[in-house]
Length: 129
View 1 (cartoon, rainbow, N blue to C red):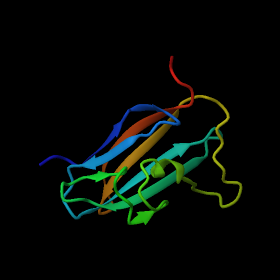
View 2: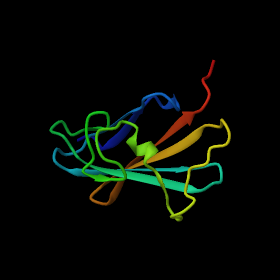
View 3: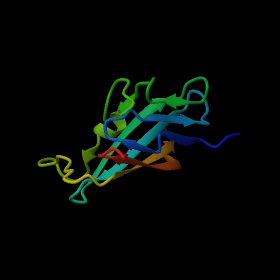
């Protein structure tokens, strides 16, 4: 049996590009949680999460499926990124990006609250020419 995993394409993307995120190798009907963590330019931690019901092919495609719980609702391939919230503050919690350095996003996959896989994605703010 294939180990559950996260596939992100492209690995390196620009801020305004769509990113494909697919979780595969799971048992149909399972509930899986995808968590994202990233740091802003103040080194403040932001996190998001989304729980999905695995389809009959053993996959979850964020571009086609809506989470059943999490920090965003509805089908949104980039929802796991934009819905990240500050982990410690309730006020003054905006995400600060003051330069064009790439942003590292750590995606982690959990099944029944057990860590299964992780993937590091990189988002750029200027196009490579």
